[in-house]
Image (cartoon, rainbow, N blue to C red; front, side, top):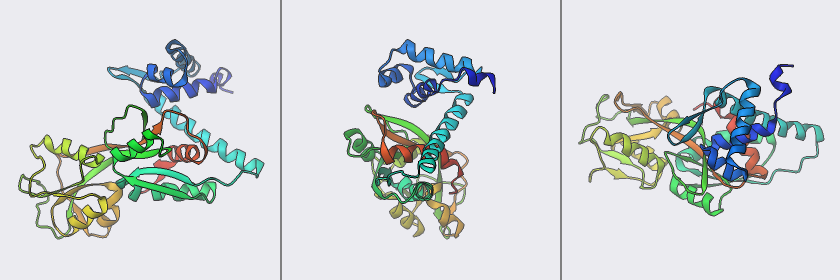
Length: 299
C-alpha cells in the first residue's frame, strides 16, 4: 500500500472540496461551521499525506493546483462509484425520486438531455422536471429554494448561491451557410442576434464585442431563446454567437457555418448553481454523477 494511504483521511478531502467550491478558506469555514485555522490545518494534513500542493492563493481567494483539480475529479468519481456499489450490493435501493433541475436555455437544450440519458441508464428510471430560464432567473430560483440546483452559463454572481465549475464552453460566430456575410469579418454594419438582458450568453458576448468597438445597435435583433436565434440566423438575418453545444448538428448538416474571427475567441463557463445547504436525494446523485461523467460527452 502506498505510504500516503496510511495517513489519508477522507474527511480532509471533504474540507478540500468545500474550499475549492467556495474559492475561499474563510467561506468554506463558514459553510462547514468550523474555524478558519481548522480548515487550513485539514488542507495542510492532506497535502502532507500526498506530498503535493493542492491549493494556490491569489488576490481574491484560493484555487486548486493541477494536483488539486485531479484529486477533486477522482473524489467525485469515487462518490459516484460508492453510490453504485451500495445499490448493487444491497439490491434494495428505493426508486429514485424525480430530478428537479433548473438550467439556462443553452444548457437545457444541448447538455442536459445527454447528461440525464446517461444518468438514467446507470441509475434507473428517474423522472425529470426541467425548469428552463436565463441565468439570472435560474440563480434566483435556487437562491429562493424553489429549485434544489441549477446549471447556468456566463460569469454569474450570487450572494447566497454556491457556483461550481462543470465545464468550459466556446461561443462560435455563426451565419447561415448561404449567408452573404464575409467569412473573416463582423463590422459595425453587420446585424447581431442577441439574447435578452439577463442571459449569460448575452453578458459574455457583449463583453467580447465591446473590446472590438461593437455594441448593441438599433438594427440588431433581440430574441428570447437559443432556438429562436438558431432559426433567425438560418434565415440570414445576421450573425449569432452560439454555444458549440447548440449548433453542432447545424454545422454537421451544413445549415450553418462558422466565421473565422481570430480576434474573437469567446470562452465561458458552465457552472452548477448550488444552495448553501448540502444536496440530498436525486439532486445529490445527479450532481455527483454529472460532475464525474461530463468529460466523455460528445457535442
